[in-house]
Image (cartoon, rainbow, N blue to C red; front, side, top):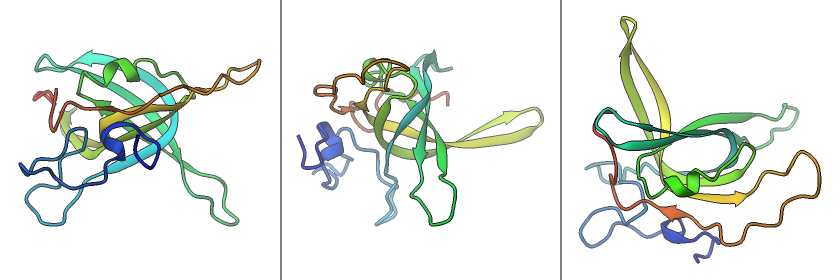
Length: 169
């Protein structure tokens, strides 16, 4: 368990391994540019339950949406951002598959821009490609007492850089 209370690679704040590759469970770096990093840490509420589907190349992915609150600003209404996430590593799928609407989760990964052609134009969107995924707290039931705190809901690291990534994205 790391000092931030998260199991797995999400607690590791070290650099690349001796081979120059990103450590297991960490997003790959920003390419060949020195000092570039693409690392995302999100803690928020699940707002679209995970769905699983097959990619064009035959791989499997999990996709979900989460809502992350923004820091409060004096005199402003409370705001949040909807963030789309995707997990190509099938090692993450059992953990993510347990999530329900309203669960508070932690995801680490890298920001990706996905581009596709549709209806005569080019479209794109940003999403977070997950490297680790952890349940922080179950959603409270609509009625009755709050659920017992989750025991050992640690992060599930990906199998390594690019693990399980489909080429048909």
